[in-house]
Image: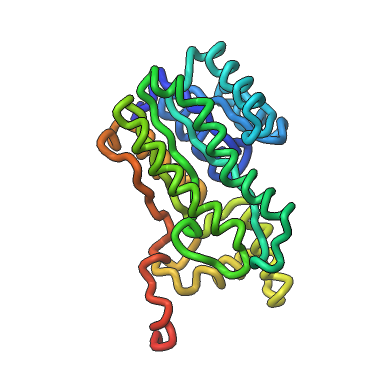
Length: 263
């Protein structure tokens, strides 16, 4: 397939995990990529072999985002797809979450998407482009003691709908992908917490533990989530906007109160 020939994707958090997988798949289907993230070295490791551009910066900082978009326009002529993938933790329940932690959760998860969309929209309107926001299963359901993360991932779905509503008549589509557990370096760190807490053998055992009641019985790979992102960005999704897609192995289909009756 060559769905993205002559198209350019601007991907935040593009140096590892889902962002890197999206970049590689987008390039493999004929597109050009511009990656933004806080650390230049992993961005270059992904972008270099793809003939892409790596820009170190804070995706919640409008000036730095404008600089990165200007580089995309200079090198490739513009931006057709924004993948708002940057994010981070928001650990703790409400009582445990101080003002600084709440502000950080907001900046990492919500502000990054908002600022990038706002700054990229003029270009996306001109090219009738699309936005794919990486929310989470936590954008629909609440996990324990992650109030900041859950709140911001819910907010991303609201932002997705709002921008889809306001800019659809100008040719811009906006959708959200909501993964469950995905094997990424960030998730590996969370699995290590479970390894230490429950004295498990390794992170594989931790992933098995957290997906024990998921119908497909395993975490997703970054490439499997990237498949959903690229679908939303492609012409195959030309009539889809303002929606969210759960990529969770069926986790959201489980009726938790009935698990006690399962064999």
